[in-house]
Length: 110
Image 1 (tube, rainbow, N blue to C red):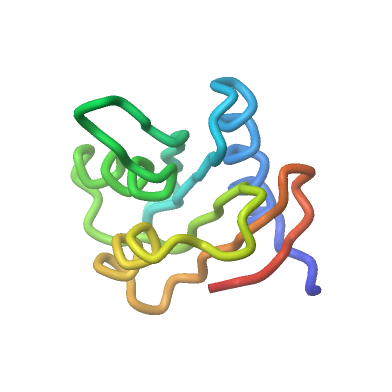
Image 2: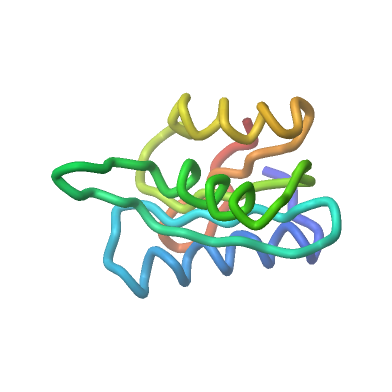
């Protein structure tokens, strides 16, 4: 697997911190076209369920972001969930979405 550049590796670090801080199954981070980052963990409430990636995209959009450069998800899952991937691609069809394991090791790029 290829190494991430510094900015993309930072996304993985932020996603790991969101996951670790909350004990959630997933953490995610997105970087907008101005270089700002937004991070989130899985939301699992009786009335609201969002993947970490959906929540990170929602945080970015609610801050006025109109485009994304890249995203990262830290999870034990073998793939990025489709709804979160679709949310990223709504803003940036070509943006890479990195999936890393809980230890931060890159698993794949979607």
